[in-house]
Amino acid sequence: MVLLKVFVLVASIQQLVAGLPQVHVTPNSRAATGCGKTQLLPGVTQYRFGLKSSGKDRSYSYHLPSDYDKNMKYPVVVGFHGSSSIGLFFELDTKMSESRYSGNKVMVYPNGIDGSWAGPTYHNGSTVQEDIQFVADLVADLKSSVCVDDTKIFATGMSNGGGFIGTLACDPLGSTLFAAFASHSGAFYTDTDGPNNGCNPTNPPIAMLEIHGDVDKTVHYEGGQGDGGPEPPIPEWLEWWAQRNGCEGKKEEGLAEGDVHHFSWMCGGKGGLVQHYRVGGMGHCWADTEPNLSQISVPQGPAPIRASEIIMGFFDTF
Image (cartoon, rainbow, N blue to C red; front, side, top):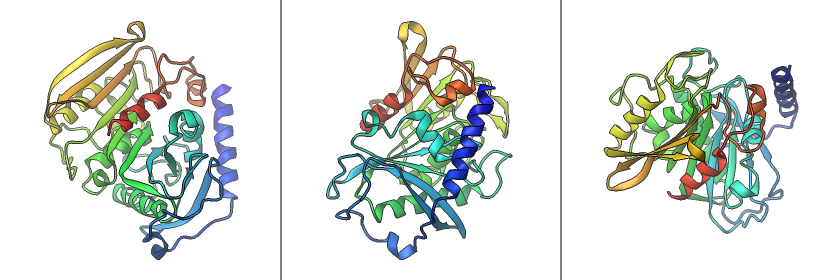
């Protein structure tokens, strides 16, 4: 019954968003910088519709700090929702638009076609390359109206969106768009066959963080068959990224009285380029010490860590 109520809430939000007026953006408007341009509603999530990408109408929402300064360049965090969802649901679940997490950042929430991102077999409506191109077009569109620090654009996502983080990081175009990547409960359908399986980031090494519950029943920690195809074991997937980045040593530490295990690899003489948090007893939900919507859908109680805080801290180091 609780899960049904969550799905009803998502459906209601989708209907509300679909009924909002559409704003069509032309390619020429995306060429200019957004620095110096006034934003009328800082601190309030705003919606962009009609962004043409690969011949399709795409959309996203964005949230500016309440004290947004049109002449200051801001870091940007792009958050990708899970399957059967929309950007607004990811925003509500992670609380990333709250000032405690993004008081000095611009948050962006793209919408996948028909509620998901390309990669799994259940996705329809766009290819992997079309979704990657949409992300590139989104970044260009955002920069036409918002003052953005080009060197501090980051990507995070949950579940299907978390798997799309891996797809972006492995792609020659997608990997150039972001300074660091963070996946939560990632369903890595496009990265299943080892470190040399066609993963071709343009400028390695790639900063990568992954957070996962060890009793996740949707995206299994030990890998196997998922809803959209085979998925790699999370420990092996992390080792592939360590190899791709030329990492040598791995450090493990227990947190939250042993309920959380944090892993960090030494890469190129630096620690922390590849990191992982394994959360004991947590299922397929966003880790938070406070209740959130994905915890209700599992259902389970709060986790011993705050993923939003960890992810923002990871991004701040880059």
